[in-house]
Image 1 (spheres, one colour):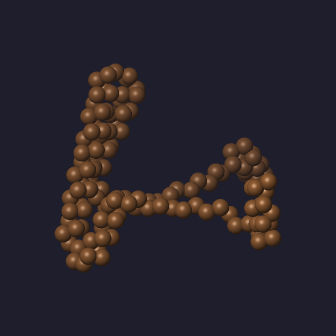
Image 2 (cartoon, rainbow, N blue to C red):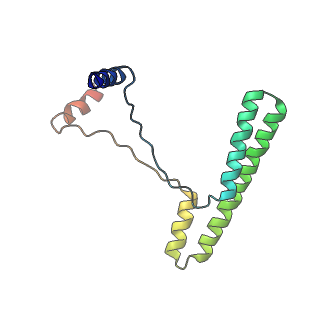
Image 3 (cartoon, one colour):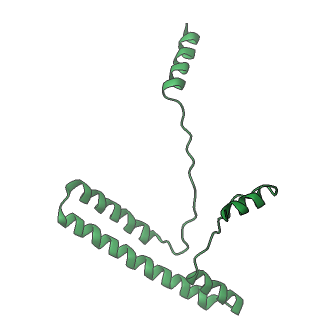
Length: 129
């Protein structure tokens, strides 16, 4: 009896409440991220939740001040991180790599899917018809 109960329950759960799989992307934190910044972000989230719950302007002002604090903390942390990286660089190649990383964002080029070779002339000709 227990076996039939378990199999029936498993069937019902699989049918009405099936297991959902989720993928979690793990990204490394920024090299300038510190415990102080993480705590400030937690304060900001707490202030944001309080503001959204209460809908008072004082809580919005607190949230905005937390945002500005985090912005300043991150800017100063980035500045000190890159200053130390620049002073520690020994070659001009390393210095170029650091300055390039500071100024240029990584471009990811997304190319179209390749067409079969025998279809390509027809597709190209269809553009000009």
